[in-house]
Length: 387
Image (cartoon, rainbow, N blue to C red):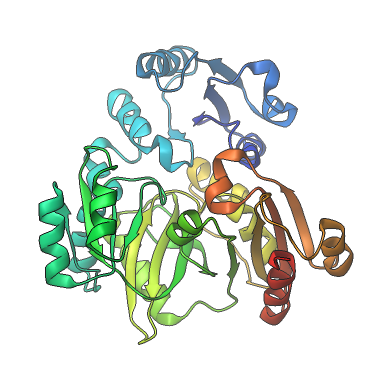
């Protein structure tokens, strides 16, 4: 029986399904978290073989003691994962220190730093946005004079769109540099294009066991900075150029037995320019959208892959599945009841979102699916229509 440690299994709440899948597949599932045991969902409790609580997930020594406890009681740990970008570096250190398979500290540079990602993209023939690391306002101004405005400034090793800024002129550049923290930032040319993702689960040979693609109404940077609403939808057929580029990236970055979320700009000229690679599932409820779009179970597929080495999954992309978000501080033309009454046949899930997701994903989510993309677009416009 394989021992699998889930780090912070209680959050987000839909990730408890990973524990359920592991239990059903016959794994010894071990939870390592700082949430009081009495407060975790009963389904998660029932799916864990043991739960080790620490006082603070950011205290590495406490986490290490938890892993030591599990090893002493159950033996070698085969898998350690949180499926969260936030904990990638913590996981890597634990894998190093306890010889657990998976991403290690030596891998972090290429999957956390956008400047290093560019080198991998270029090595496989993909065009990247022009950019460089800058350590001062003076260096940033030199770059902007060379490339012209607008530009994008963001932490070289950031999470999501945090501290990411679109800059239109010298005054805005000076304002941003007066406020940003003293960490490496990368400045890039602004790419005008639609965000297309290549998402899924890679097998032990860096081939997609499951894959799909999503098209976004706006980039997360714009959603956060404009405080606007997001919606994105899956496609039935992945464009060949996108799938080919995505598969090349999986091999080049060595994505094995992990979910992935690769983002690309699709420009008006038809160029495909990589934005970033993420070694985890897409955020929010997107992993549930995988299942709704294909009537499959990717949670089970992951568990079967990491526990039994099974790299077979039969699925078809039957529906366009969409995430449609709303923010509570806006006045909408159509009420929640109006939405459900009009689109009940297409709405597969609706729920409040955790506050931490508010900036990017909104306060309330609707998950919808339809065979026709036009119906998805109609729903998004109806749900997000402002008074």
